[in-house]
Image 1: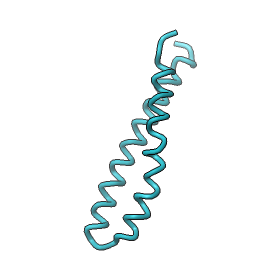
Image 2: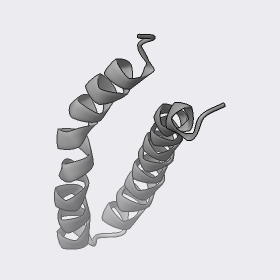
Image 3: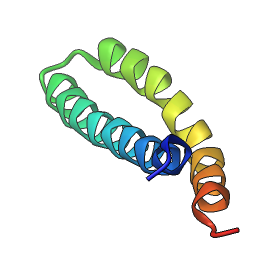
Image 4: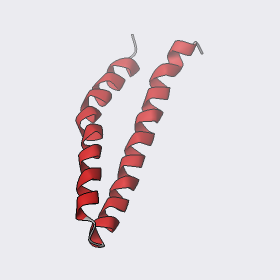
Amino acid sequence: MPNSDLLPSLLFKINENQLALEAAIMELTLWVEERGATEVGGNVRGALETIDKNEEFIKMTLAVLMTPE
């Protein structure tokens, strides 16, 4: 398998890891907010917005890369 064939799979796995980290961080954020640290929770949510904003572009790019030529 040529190295170029590995790129789409690698990017897919990186994206999968990113989404898993986002979910884990959100769970911690909810836990922190339940204990009264709403400002911290808000800051984390703001930082996680970047993942949400980029997710659609990443999905579209992966779809293009994984389409057979």
